[in-house]
Amino acid sequence: MEISSCESQGGFNVPIKLGMEFDSDEHAYECYNEYAAAIGFSVRKEYANKNKVQGYVTSRKFTCHKEGYRSKDKRDQTVQKHRKETRTGCLAYIVISRQSNGKFRITSFDEKHNHPLPSSLSHMLPSQRKINVAQAHEVTARFMEITSSESQGGCNVPIKLGMEFDSDEHAYEWYNEYAAAMGFSVRKEYANKNKVQGYVTSRKFTCHKEGYRSKDKRDRTVQKHRKETRTGCLAHIIISRQSNGKFRITSFEEKHNHPLDPSSLSHVLPTQRKIKVAQST
Image (cartoon, rainbow, N blue to C red):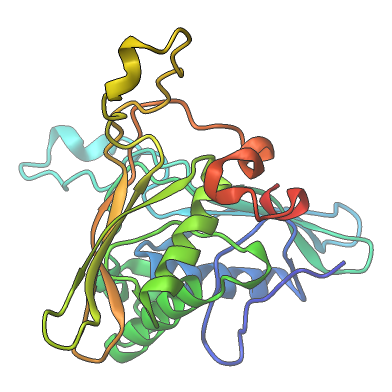
């Protein structure tokens, strides 16, 4: 089944996923390259395995440009000013394999980088130099638009600072779906409103383990106390209303101080109980 959703004709990209298929290895490279432009890294063509008889490509690996380390130059002893080491041994990559139908499928994918990703400078990176500044910003904007609006069907992508939503409820629904994939539940912490017109100006959504349960005055008479489930977790997002009426994430803490429940169990968490099991897995 073809899962590829990379729109190569329009010059836009969506997050790369395992199982995506492409018409050719070059098509896969172009899509990964555009994905890289939005995220903020460049692509290196690592290797290409070919059929020994007919010579066609059977598999390829594309990596982050900071993959590995630069090999030692024999001239180093005579060079007075050495080149700065730019590689970090980054392990981010995709491997594509030729299928029986002639298409190429992503069979291995690591999205984590061990270095900062400067998306605003992506047009200056090696494999992005053919993309001008306007195109690089357009790709990035499109990527952010997709990741902040495609909440239908249970699709989840990492929350990022600067993401915008049509309403505060849209932001809550999106953060809730993100939470379902990560394995926690969402608490509505507060909502600030305009004192004159009454519309929401900012809101804070937190992990369900935020803070601690307040002490109950009846504790002295209760024989069996409820178990403390909160841990003082600081994970949260704050959204603020913009001049265009949309809500932007202005503060984001993704780290939790407790284990995250497996995604297969996320549907039993407080804000996930309305989501079907199939949606949360």
